Image 1 (cartoon, one colour):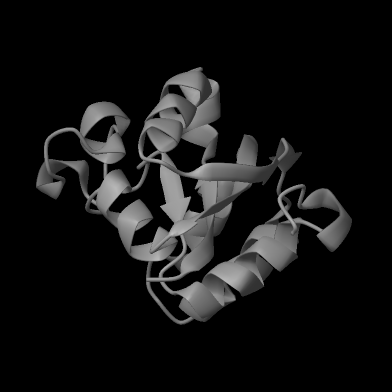
Image 2 (cartoon, rainbow, N blue to C red):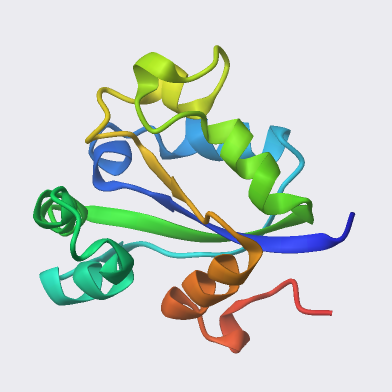
Length: 142
């Protein structure tokens, strides 16, 4: 296995419910190294750009509205097998289907308000991290 990077976003529901510390604790306990984080407020344009791959999906408008409804926290993470391990850590999109102990099972309220985003591939992780962070902001560079 090789060291990979992935992007997490603590979504507006996570921030509004003041669960950031608890979710970050799960991430750190999962062996992830936090390389960069910041608080942002996405606009409809920036949320739409980030989720452009879903533009034709029926949930796109609701997703953009939700992601621009409040502050969120993008986080660049690093670990061996980061993408797959992070997807396991966060659990299924719908918290009803998520495994016990996963972030979504523990904290998410619904499929639409599911606390956290995670990259779905190493390539998308690189693209998504670059969407939010410059190279100077990534403190884990070797």
